[in-house]
Length: 48
Image (cartoon, rainbow, N blue to C red; front, top):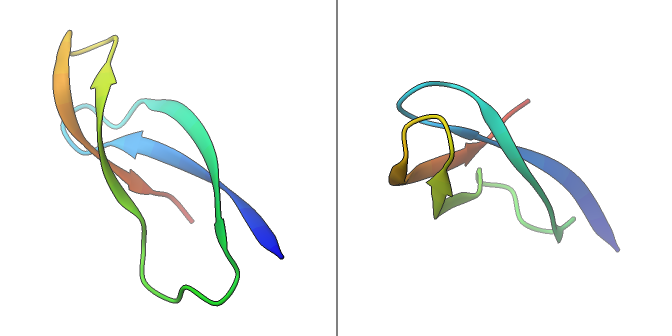
């Protein structure tokens, strides 16, 4: 079973991406993605 999560940029806070993660995963997801607002690759973290 997967859970839908929203990823927000760690620099500017804009919510750019959505993805799915396994329901058994307890820690927050962190991925390095391209932010359109910052115009650079930054860490994107799972929001609540």
